Length: 282
Image (tube, rainbow, N blue to C red):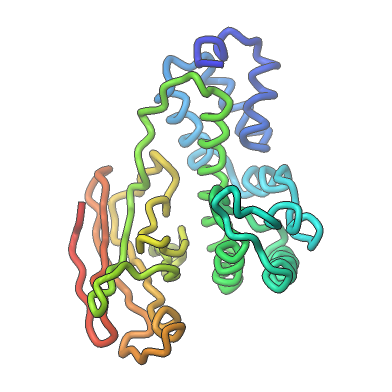
């Protein structure tokens, strides 16, 4: 189906399709106010604006309840066992049991299931992310989860309209990568938080771990623009070096930077155990 065909559907059919992309009744009802959509860019703009500017915590939490709960041992084995053929390393029983426990701990702490854009992520990567985010406050997790939901929504809209042109989608406005200059290779599996100053304190609004190329390219959902302000990126380098049994002078590195407009901002880190530098990249 393409966008023209989608626009030819009646509103009841459109509502059903949109609800499958994001399980918030209010989000769907407000999206219908923009229907039919002139083009794919207008569709994405509406999906983003309604989610961030009109929906509330109640709507975000409602959308979370419409995700399948994958947190018990059996469901995790079904999802992650024997996945080598898909390019994802199969999970061991130890990882699956730890992941099941972390899912339970997460829901008990925050009152909703763990929401993450899981495309291409292994069980071990999911476990790292879950354990990282268990340290956050409820306010931070709501910020992060709503961003992850928006990533999922955009992916589902693309799957709903596979014959449409989504070239309007931009990469995350904020990206980063880490190069370990002591060995000349990317620093992979490093936890990074993106924070903004809210309610008189720094709060995490996005979080992830670097991939095998030392990058996080999807901290923010596509086409989500931050307000011009000062932001902070925290790089948890201590764990990275600890895993290699290397001492480091900098267990955690904080980089503050300004955004001025809706341009893309790349914040790289050149790292070694006893020094680091950064710059605005491209």
